[in-house]
Length: 273
Image (cartoon, rainbow, N blue to C red; front, side):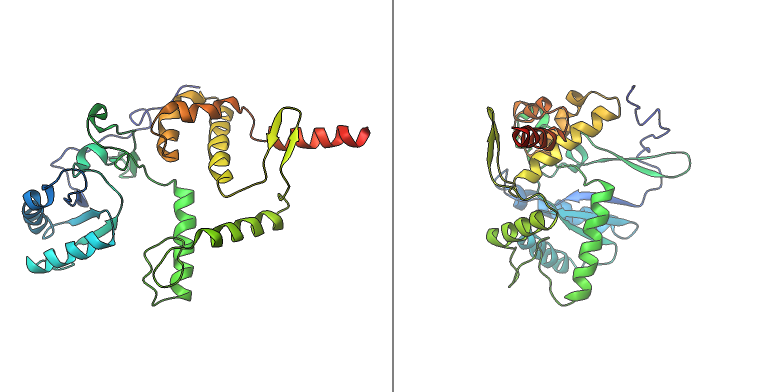
C-alpha cells in the first residue's frame, strides 16, 4: 500500500504572510548552551510584546521553575496574560521552527500536523528532548478526560504531574506498581514467570507496557499493508531510544498475540500429557 503524503491528502503549508492563529516560541534557557538565556531572553520578550497585541503567543518552557521565571519577566515588561498560552514541554534548544511540528491546512480550512524525527541537524547538537512528537488524538482525549475528572475532584490542587501524588509530588514507584499489578489481576493477565522450552515468559510489570506498545504499533502498521521497518524512526522517538537498533528488536515479533497463543498451546500440550 502506497504511503499518502500530506500533499496527496490535500494539505499544504501556509505562507508566512497568511492569516494564522498564533506563533510558537521556545523560551531561552541555559540547559544546552551556557549564557543563552541572558543573551536571548530580552529579544524573546520583545517578540512577545510585538506579537501578543495581534495574535496568541504559544510559549514553551521546560519545567515549573522556568514557568515561574517567565511569569516574573512578563510582569516586569508590563505584558498581560492576554493572548499568552504557556506549555511545559521538555526541550533542548530554542529553534521551534526546526524541531517543532509543521502545521498544515487544506482548502476547507481543516488543520493537520506533520511530524518528523528531528535529529539535531545531523546529531551535531543535543536533540533527544526536541524530537518529542505529539500524542495521538485518541490518547490525548483520554488524558484530557482524566485531567477534567481530576479537576472536578480536586479543584484546588495545582499538582503539575500527570500521575499526581500528595504534596505536589508525583506518584511513587511502589504506588504505580501496586496499581498496575492490581489491574493486571483484575483483568486476568496475572501469571508467574514461566520457562517453556527455550523461551522465558516473565510476569507482567509496568515496563511490559512499553513492549506492548511497540509490538502492537508494528502489528497495526503491518495489518494496514505498510512496512513496519519504515516506522522505526518515529517509534524510536516514542520509545526514547538513541539508536534504531534498540527499536528494531521489536521487528522480530510479527504477531502481538503469539505470546499468549504460545503459552496456551504449551499448557494445552502439557494437559494432554
